[in-house]
Image (cartoon, rainbow, N blue to C red; front, side, top):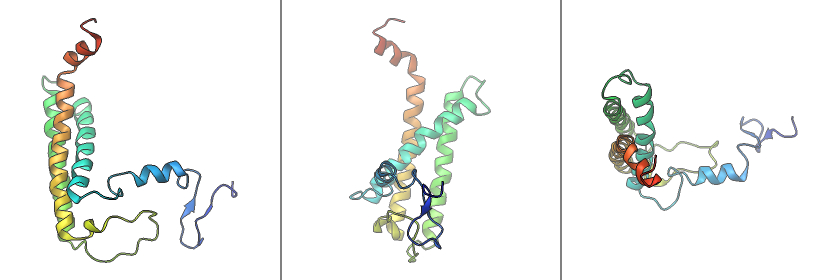
Length: 160
């Protein structure tokens, strides 16, 4: 086992290379996430990350929330996911006000975050776009779930 897991460079740093975190697939996957992809503006990063979070937050609230057995589980899921996105946006704004422009040494991250997110203005743009994308993603998930019978009939050609 010790020949598979070995220290990445200096063993005193505490970063171990495993077949999972040092594979080419893992590095390519993480490098293509919107947080690390090059050439994106803070608005585009926030919009993309917000859409993914809003879309994925809808399902647990609609299917597992306290109103799942009521008449309106989908609407409750939409409102709950949107409220959580608003709370997360407030947290992003608080973080922005805490001084994100301080230089911090990042020795464990193989990818460096973009310089545009190291300013208060860039972080504010990111947070605003996260809010729009998050509520839009939750709304899109709600509309898909609410119109699922119609969409299934289109795909199957009207045959059930």
